[in-house]
Image 1 (cartoon, one colour):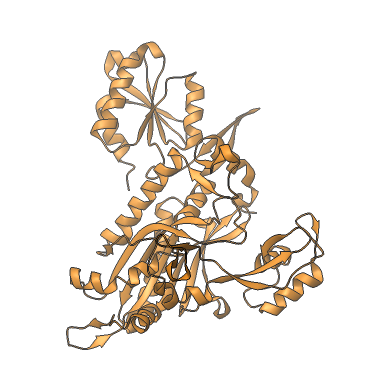
Image 2: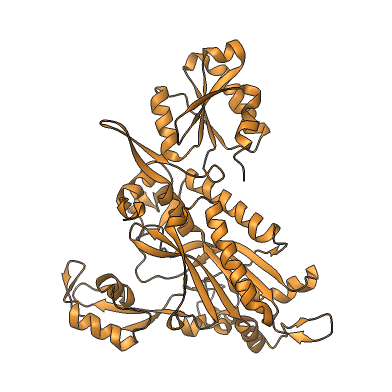
Length: 458
């Protein structure tokens, strides 16, 4: 059995809550079902993940970044197919009034059934025939019906259908409707990509598994435009690029896999899709997807807007570019990284430590400054202030409690290094630097701290 399958998910979630990575949303009012706020530690991690995504997917690939709005013209969603097709199968238990995703019920209770191949009526028959109790209740099932996942809202002061619009369910469409603007103002030549990072919203029937499936989430999406005869090449290229990216962040190779979609699974726009999946404690789950969207989106927006979104080649010919889309859910990626890093180590009998073995480049803090005793903290404060104000190193300071307890606190939030200032520091200008994973300690000069830590930058 894989190590991840032996990890206690509830233990990990409890640790993330108590240590300040994640808080229950509006907790003082009783919260909102499966809605979470990110604390300082998770926010620091997400900032670094986004920075590395921009570096790897935008800057180093010579692509372009935009920031489109969450609320847009509703015709965008009509053209994209979301109004007509973006739905899940909803079924309700009339005994308790609870609603569920039909495919999730079948997938959870009958793992040998391929829910992607099952028809609407087959799912309903399986549930009504076999699921007589569910969620601790007797069941009387309704018929399955489609449930559109988009959040509706109103623009302006008048509440009418004419002012109805939606919170975006993906960031991609904001890129497609700006394709012409970006191509014109940047004078970009095919192939090129346009990416953005932003919030999306999906009115999930049953949000679950902590931050794995929520109604509000953040995406990092790239739409890579290419000639139609090059789509397969770039489809494979971006699959490999995405795998390299999650490994750059520190995910273990044993816990990730690439899974091509079968024909029955493909979205209405897709010529081909592959997911990079992660082995969560509850099983394999989609971490990110790479889709060959063909020219579906640009063609649809041309049809509905009556505007040309064709690309003019140097020889004067016009084409509708094909699109390869690497789409990453930041919340899921954060969750996977935290699960991957979480370990409970037995040091000696009856003595365990919780440690997050996060990669140096995404750890909330990269180093902690720990004076051995409060009365010798002036030098510690000096080192802390220098690193804080004169470097990009993420640094924290802790002088409360025994040095052993402070080491454990830093281990538990993933800080890779801890620097201890002691009496010897005043004699020879050196400090002790402790490695989180090995717990080994090395004596180095204060002047060497920055260069020592920078060796771990990627």
